[in-house]
Length: 177
Ligand SMILES: *[C@@H]1O[C@H](CO)[C@@H](O)[C@H](O)[C@H]1NC(C)=O
Ligand SMILES: *[C@@H]1O[C@H](CO)[C@@H](O)[C@H](O)[C@H]1NC(C)=O
Image (cartoon, rainbow, N blue to C red; front, side):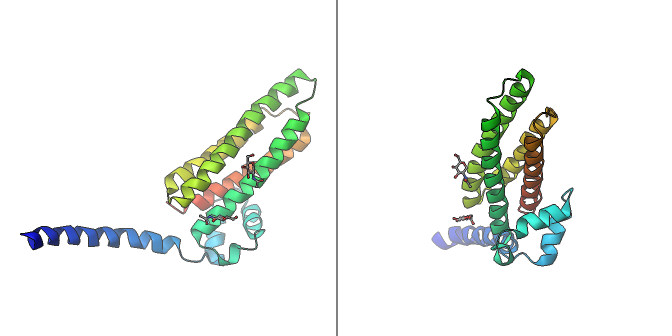
């Protein structure tokens, strides 16, 4: 009785493995220069995307998961830097600017915490959650853009850089799905 029960079980297991393996296979291939260009062609500023990803010395030797990790790291560093800038500007007395800075502060806080979640999700191979975090990163940066007053030009500049880095994270993590 045991064998007749086991055969379908092992057959399903085999199917499951065959189904899962190509996915892992595709993701664990080293990212070639052509694939990198193809990924960045989905970015509104492809040269920015290429330059950002190539700024990490590990890029020539990583797979798609490693490249996503790099894009997350770029977002992480930029978000912390911009958050520090917002904190330094927030002492302003201009009420309109202060309101804008408060809104941006919330957005950057959210991005930083979602970036932490994305790191955990990447380790757990939960690429859906990673991709959602990248979209959220874009939305947060756009929200800070939308309300931008002209009285904080440096924030405007850094936030644009942030939005592009979020988009880099989006185009890379789209390829995980
Ligand atoms: C950014 O800030 C978060 C929260 O304070 C911290 O956990 C993380 O290590 C920082 N990342 C970098 C790259 O400094
Ligand atoms: C991501 O990069 C960090 C170092 O920057 C490394 O410690 C971590 O293991 C990497 N995670 C993955 C999933 O590759």
